[in-house]
Image (cartoon, rainbow, N blue to C red; front, side, top):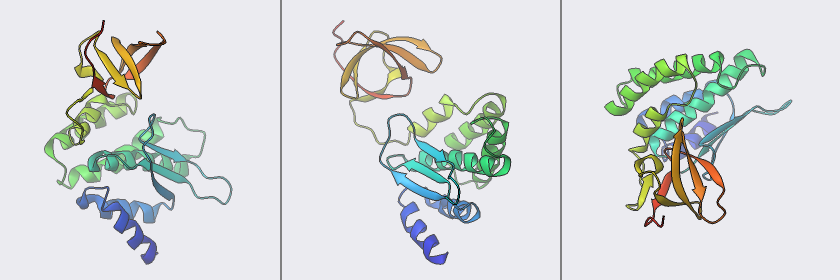
Length: 209
């Protein structure tokens, strides 16, 4: 186990805030799991997969996240693992069992006093929203994105005016109306409409409309 722990430590120091490497290592020790850092995925930041018979569960985390996003995403997925191990597979993905596990994992990082104040405050507010509703917390996501490294021509979709033209994943869209946390956007070429997350990082183009 010492060898495995050392291997994890040498990797995790490149992805996590240094103050929380030991915390995640302890989680890995307490809850055996295949923990993998993977190439960025467009639809999710992390993932938990329950293992089959005689197989370990698996957690995957996108490798392009900033350290604080990596930490929160890791705790999010560990909450799935803990809820599954405690209550079994018949629970809702982000039901009360997951909320309880996630809250319990967040409290120690808040109490450590090592988080930037804006993230600490956002997590404290998030704890109330997690208990009351779902796992989606766009306010916390906004705060975490402040620590991303992005190019000067990249913006969040929500920061653009309505009817602005932008590029995303090699396609050109026009921004439409907000529907909860996503905007209805029209593909300029195909004229099809898609829901795009408000915090999607897009390239602003000269408005052709």
